[in-house]
Image (cartoon, rainbow, N blue to C red; front, side, top):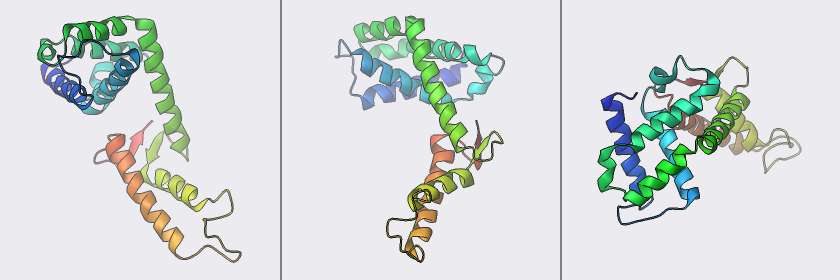
Length: 192
């Protein structure tokens, strides 16, 4: 299902994830929580590292978690992982991933949370979350607009430093959120 180039890229990322968690071929068992954490990181890599749309563009929304799971299993089946992961841990991953019911629930929960987060950030409900929308939400939060103003709020008005500071922090974080965390790259928005 994956192109060889995409498979190689994902396997390299998976090996990086294993290294981050100090998982080597010496380790013979992992708990389910760590396995699910690693699965989630693989799914994030999958979503952020390849054009996932190529693989799931004609798939019904309800079936997308299953397709993503199939792609994850394909990565886990690579012979390149043999030097980086023990047969016991590899088998544990496969056993866990073969429990389609559990994996579908995990993937649906992650997908639903992501969709709800993006929906809540889409202030004008146009299907796109822009840097400006995220920035405005951050500024509103920092300025405590629903609670009466910034933390150094005075009866007459807010101090002169908080609005500028909040706007700068909001712009930096919003740009990072859209371009890096959500992989918007050169775009100033992401489609939800």
